[in-house]
Each structure stands twice: as C-alpha cells, then as structure tokens.
Length: 377
Image (cartoon, rainbow, N blue to C red; front, top):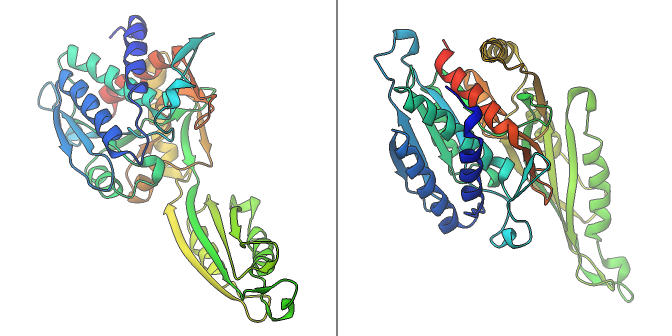
C-alpha cells in the first residue's frame, strides 16, 4: 500500500473536517460532523450505525468485515477510538483559519483530533482498496470527549470489551512517540458556607467564607505528591459580592491528576475529610475521578513492544511516551484490554490558537495504523 502519494487527499479531507466546526456542547454542529464521518466510512466499505443521543451529538459506529474468513486468533475486532468534538466555539475559523506553513498544518481541532480521524479513514481506505482488512475492524467516533465522555463512555467500554486491541487516535507527541501512559483525571468542588455581615458595622459577627477557603486551598495543595505522580490544582475560585460585605460563600474548583491506581481513592478520602479551620463556617465537598489512570504496566509494555515490532517492519521507528492529560484510552486501560494511544499525527499546541500537526506525520501514521490492523495477532 503506497501512502506517500496520499498526502494531498489527506490534507484536503482534513481541511474539510476542520471547517465543519464541532464544539462539544453544540449538538447540531457535532451531528453535522457525525454525518460527514459516517459518509466517509460508507465510502470505504463500512457498515455504519448512527447512534442517536439527546445530551450530546450522535455517535458513529463503523464496522469493516475481513476480506476473508479470519483464523480464530483474528476473530475479535480491533477497535479504533476517535472523537469528533473540539474545544473551539463556532466562529473560531474566522480568526484561526486552516492553513499550512513550513511543513505544519494549523487549525482548530487539526490535532485534537480531526487529524486522527483522517489517519483512520486513510488507513481503512487503503485496506478497502486492497480487498479489505485481514480481521474485523470497528471504529467508534464519539461526540463528547472534550467534555468528559459522559455520554459515550458506556459504548466505549462495551465495544472495548469485545476487542482484541484498542487504538486511540489522539495526537502523537511532538517527537512522534505514541502515548503509553496517561494520568487519571478527577474534578472536585469545595464550597465554603460562612455568614454575611456588614464589613464596617458588623464585621465581628460575620464568618468570612473566603478566609476559610484560603485555609482549605493550602491544605488541598499540600496533597500534591510529585514522587507518586499526584497533583492537585485549585484552578478557579469564586466568592463574595462586594468589598464591604463579609462573604458568606466561596467555591473552589480542583483538578486532580493521578498516575498510580489507588491514588484517586486516597486523595478523595482526604478531600472529603477536610474540616473548617474557622468556627462558624461549614464545608461541602463534591466530585469524583472522571478518568482512571492508564499506567505503563506490564500489559502496556507488551502491547507497545508488539506494535514497535510491527512499526519496524513498516520502516517506522516508534517511541513510547506519555502525558498528564486524559483521553478515552483511560476508560479502556482498567478493562484489561491491550490499548495504545496517540496513533494520530504528531503535533502540539492542543486547545490553543497555536494548534498544529506536522504534515508528513499524517502519512506516517496512516502507514503505521494500516500495518497494525494487518499484522496484529
């Protein structure tokens, strides 16, 4: 399969998908993207199912049958996971248009992760043109990864349990490495209840919720443990109504990242055990781990080494890396299914006006993905 000549068509398809703006919270926009992706899958020989949703955009399941009856070791499908939503609101293209410069392609969602969708569609088009894959392939394109995958998680886990291998099309690292570990992600809210009072005439009878929150912020930040790969970040605080009013409420949003299994439970217990430092104030803590960690454990090491060997056979030197960010791969890792992330094109600047991919990595990743789909045992 010759991928070197496919860059122009890959770039054209990528531009088309990027220019279908699809912010997570705009169902109609994501549905337009779903229809386009579904049509591309049908053109490549897939049986396509649009899964209707009400709380998010629709999901797309595409299934490719093998070219011939697979041997028993290849009867379970390989699952490809990609998301169609982006963090960019409608209208972003006006100030951040799709563009190419110095071997890089820029645009909203070009890396995270419409480039990965193009890689998958290109690899599958090549396999379809050569008669079809050697084993079943399922691709799930989801509508809400950027907002937590709350709608799509059940389907992700259901299809992953049926798979022999799960490949996630998030962007590769800037040096081309795939992602073999990810931190788990938790979101917690700490709410302080105090007592309002006039700051000049009745100060002593007030209970300053912001003062209490200051104590809690220090306690929360001290839970960070770099040796364990655990970090907590109080990233947003709201409180008060006016400088001459003792505030009766303050709210803090806390981001939790964990590397090791069990750390989320330990930190959650510590957060729920927080107690007020000031008399007359009260705390309310809510939240949970949204994505479990994907550690670089023995299963991941084995998976990476197998894919690395396949890549070498295709003339590609593959490196392993990781990131503190989460993805849908985090949901797969605890299921005991081999999973590898970062199969999309290499890039940087995700979620910003600097988001880009290296143009030549589109071709290399499509070549790699096709090789894995053919050679995985």
